[in-house]
Amino acid sequence: MQITELKPKKVFYYFSELAKIPRGSGNTEKVEQYCLDFAAEHGLKSYRDEYGNVMIFKNGTDGYEQSAPVILQGHLDMVCEKLPNCKKDMEHEGVDIIVDDGFLRADGTTLGGDDGIAAAYIFALLDSDKIPHPPIEALFTIDEETGLRGANALDASKLKGKRLINIDSEEEGVITVSCAGAARVSCSMSVNAEAAEGMSAKNEQPQKKRTVQKHRYGTTIKS
Ligand SMILES: [Zn+2]
Image (cartoon, rainbow, N blue to C red; front, side, top):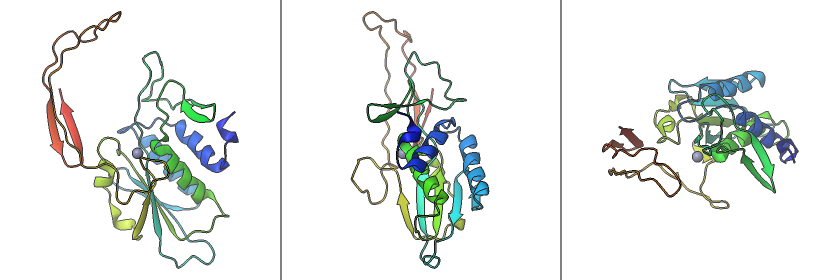
């Protein structure tokens, strides 16, 4: 089965489009541009703040023009990890999606379901002329995975909504009030790498103790 056969069709169409764009945290310029191009193609107003967070605005549908706007939010960046034998250059290439026995996964890499599915849902709604909705303020933040940096640097001056639905949760079927994540506790330790049976240790030298800087929205590790 192909991803384009999954329903809702538009959601999975946009999910597959996003999968083609390399978008690890700190490498989101292309996907930010994708959002801006999407807005232009659909005649919607957009705004990218100085940090790189993107907003797209859509009026309410018939009868809902005067309703209070709702902010729909997801993050554009993803965690880029791959299997040791995977040749994918995740800095420059998108991921290859596989529909496998009822599950969506990527070939040898992380999928970017977190939080690509949020962006896909939001694009599908922005693209729809059938779903009734109040004015939508779509908010795509960046660098969530590295400590909510985009959200922390957000220029919210263009947003009027007082209600925000964050489409990034931890558990299926569970609604989280407020936000999963943000506060973090960090610690550092010295480690020695040892060869496992049948494998060589990549780093046989004792590692230098690393400096860990703690700040409210994330952690910087300097070696
Ligand atoms: Zn997430």
